[in-house]
Image (cartoon, rainbow, N blue to C red; front, side):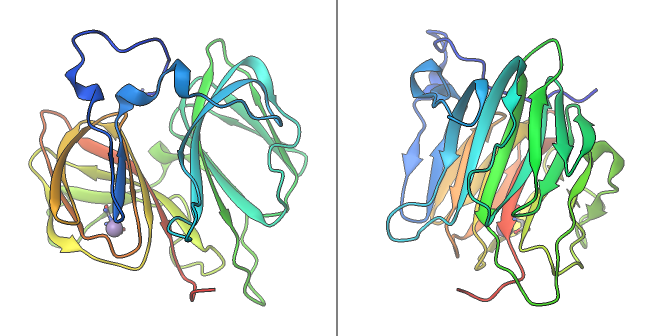
Length: 268
Ligand code: UGY
Ligand code: MN
């Protein structure tokens, strides 16, 4: 079974030189895994036996339009009504433990690699049903409706979704897309991007979409605007619209990340 790095708290070891790498610029933010510690947790009133690390949220000036949070829910904890805002959609990605999500009366059991897309306004609840804490990402965004298009809820596991090879890369850079990219009812995607050791994004992608990027496995050097930044599993990057971006994967294993992206809509 694939394992994912997830924060557990405590203090970083005295020898961890990787904690001192936080960067905040106008174009991007890097939150290294070393800062995801006890002192920066938030409690959420809608959830019991839960603490969370907010990685990204809308800020003054509208530079970021989504929120991304890691939740750690102790066994038995959870929420009957997690989403306080009916116009906000959500995407969950489980890294550890087990989370049972009940959506419109149907139960879906998520194990590591499991995901759930929860349309804005739908009734859902979640409970940590494993023997260890459930640790998962929750990406939230205000849904931008379009007449005649209704996004469907989606549940599954990344292991069961066939990844698409990026053109011209001999399958060394591939993307797993839990939500159908051809379905324009979706205004956000959360994909899993995989690089074999040494594989690259060979040009500085520069696009209108924002990103939230959480490193699930491996190491790389990431190009962000004009800077090259070393990242490893457990690190988080957020990129504003048009932040130039590229990377090369350092090995020895694959480099994999969870990637949020807003898609398919005009500016509001
Ligand atoms: O889909 C994307 O925008 C993706 N290729 N970007 C990235 O991995 N930084
Ligand atoms: Mn991109």
